[in-house]
Amino acid sequence: MLRLALRSLRFRTGGFVATFLSMFLGATMVMAFASMLDTALGDGVPAASQETLLTMANVVGGWGLLMVAFAVTSTLTLSVRQRSTEMALLKSIGATPAQIGRMIVGETAVVAVVAAALAIPFAVLGGSRLLEVLISTDQVDPGVTYVFGPAALGIGLGVTFVGSTIAAMLTTRRTTRMRVADSLLDASTGRARMGKVRLIAALLFLAGGTNLGVITATVMHGKGTDAMQTAGSASIVFAIGLALLGPFLVRRVTAALAWPLQWVAGVGGYLTVQNVRQRTNEMATALMPIILFTGIATGTLYMQDIDNKALATTGAVQTSLQKNIETLNLVVIGMLALFACIMLINTLVAATTYRRREFGQQRLVGVTRGQVLRMVGLEGILLAATGAFFGAIASLATVLPFSFARTDSIIPDSSIWVFAGIITVAVSVTLASSVGSAWRAIRTPAVEAVIA
Image (tube, rainbow, N blue to C red):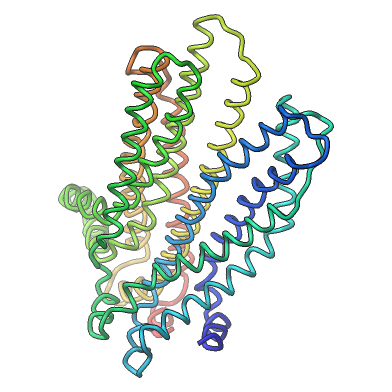
């Protein structure tokens, strides 16, 4: 099966691009922050600088690790779903579920090793730049020397390889257990139900985010900037819970907006509704990074704005600890938001490019290229609006409790333009990725796209 996995990689290189990019970027991010551990354990590092470096490595690196695992699982899920017909054919000629599972895990392991190895020089560059930022903001002593050592390599390589292979095993679990007829039906409809494990995980994350919000508003009330310890994590945990509910959210939103879309957009609206219903799981995969980006960015930026205004109101001077926390928040939001954006682009490009044959079939029955692009554009708007709405809900787990804990007011005195800017980025990235990929896909003649 390993030889089959290598042959599959050789002849299906394009199908692994999305997964490779997730692993590569994830390994780069994890190793860059893990290198702060090596740096902190270097000779002659002052205690205050060591504490800052360890905090940066543990807090930011920990959340980054979770996001990486989430991204790799999402892209692998999309890749495996796109190969449902291939899996069914392998079963029909005698391949066992265990053999198919080993093939996919073998493919993933090879990609993970290559991605992690290529990420090392970029991680070194990213880690050194991160240390420069900490030194320039007076949070780390200028005499501290950057070290990229065993902690960064061990954590980066180990997490990328182990996390990716575990994600592959979890992803293939359902597909390999299905009968041939069920596999073919799943490949043709793409409307599989959400698994119980995923539902339970989603509910646990939602409960965890809610719990952190309650702790912020009660236990951390009146404790100033310290309330960020629980408030900052609340929107991230809650957003992950909503992202896991992606298939359920897509179905419900589509059902609610089906008639308005068809009435306003005509043929394009009808095609959009039918395609979203047919491709619920693929759309849910693309919805995840939008919810994460919107929820994390909104929650963190508004939390920092609330804290800054609270300090200004009291006339207090920002201490070194508060400056450290502000830098940490900005690094967190920058890292996670950038990764979520890349994950969104990666997922949408992979999903839309795969639909070349579908677009060809539509054009052969009379759908024009303009109608195809309008359909994809409406799908993108539907995705962006759904992701922004539920991302905003996730951000409330941070914003409302922290505002009450910090200012005794549930409603923060913050500008709506911050949220408007976040929504603009989410919509722009979604439309540019999906419509741009669709435009490239429909440049192929319809007949050639169908028989390819």
